[in-house]
Image (cartoon, rainbow, N blue to C red; front, side, top):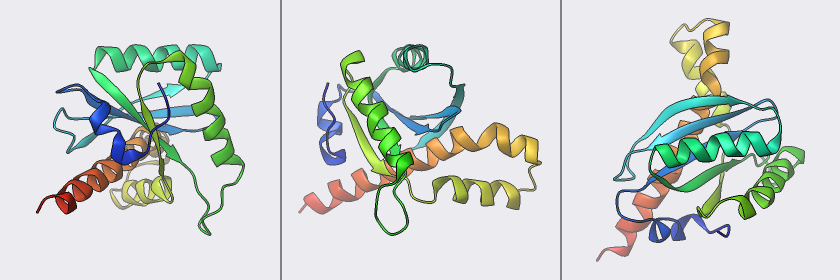
Length: 160
């Protein structure tokens, strides 16, 4: 399935399908799951990366089990709006993912997601070990929630 623009993603879902948010890092992939109404994102789990194919197979198995119909991949854009090596890596991941799944997916700006989550965990007095355990799946939830909020806002603007 092709890469689609975020506003086009909900139209490609069947009724009550969820979205899976991904925070793609070099060592891990954080996963977050939307509800069936596409309003709330919840941290799901973190996949420790091994190799591309088993990583994607594990992610797709989770997606099937959870009734996921589409993916939201965080794209780490630099603060000045340019794309650096990390963004290029996510784009390469997306290109390699496309032939392996029928699910549509969108890339969304994830600027500052990990920093925002880390600050929130520090404010909650989470230990360094606990932060390391949670940050990737919480960053995925942050990315997915921002995408869901954007979709809701676009839908509200379309209504008379």
